Length: 375
Image (spheres, one colour):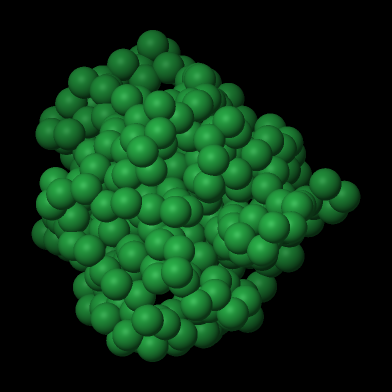
């Protein structure tokens, strides 16, 4: 029996496990991650409004692993050796016959003051709960929200949630009767942020900000985040509370792992999710850099598609068949604003947006449906 090892326990990892078992794999599967848990990051946007608690977002994968006959190793990956087919962790080495890297990326925190003065919007529960608690205690003041990308890999960003925080916080403060006491500013080094959603989407997003009285400070490189301001090459923006999502890069251990890396520090992946030039190693999700259009997104949906391709090709190779399964590149997201939302879709052929209150409920329904198999 072969030993399949999967790094990480996020979206791509869970989809890989589910796909392998669905396709009939009887091989031993070991998942390596610090905790046997799936954290549902997309719903962090509802924490400031009190619509989500920590227990809603943390899913214990113990039952899922038992049902799928998966062994979980509680450890952090610190390296790997593709020549000996071993993964190095802080709890010892693990041998593999096939490896799927689904351990996610990490945020670039080189900007001075980011660690001390900014709340990272998609980093986890603690950051958003801290932001929410501080916002609740404020009588008014200046709020700054924004995002940036990896300059060496512009597609390595997660901007969509910032728009959701922006509109959701505006709606929350209006509901509380406090909006007039706050000055809200959106900052981004990009002159037209959100372009991956499509040019029409950018116009609509900026138009919505103007309609809501949200200021913009765009097209200026970030220099620092301080206790009471955000500093850019185009000037300073006063801030009593800052929420920011920086650009992303690959896992720290990947630099010395003997794997091909992109300019942005991600593990290179082919359209089949195979890591080129390395036998029996695949990559899926935020850890990888894949071919595709400039607007290709880093989101859970793409991680799922890549993980499915990786699992299918792993099975094909084990059966002595060509590894021809590829994943499609498409962007599907619902930009929520607490009470209503907008569906955004983009692929090679189409790009459209549909606003409407039903999409707010659709986003919540999808959360429950997506997590049900893992609970």
